[in-house]
Image (cartoon, rainbow, N blue to C red):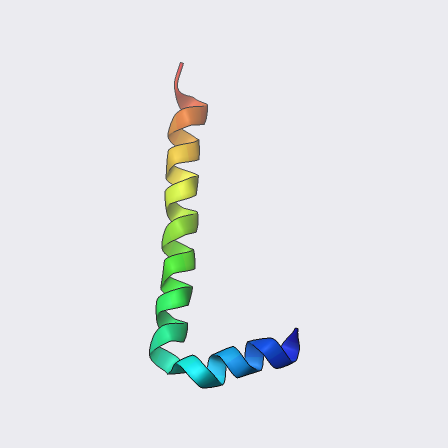
Length: 42
């Protein structure tokens, strides 16, 4: 697992790493917001 992750990071570079992290954060935020609205509706 560690070798695969290290190889992916070396192959893709900083820009792809940043984009992946931002994508994960945005995805979690959207899930929380949509889930919150769905949970709070009467």
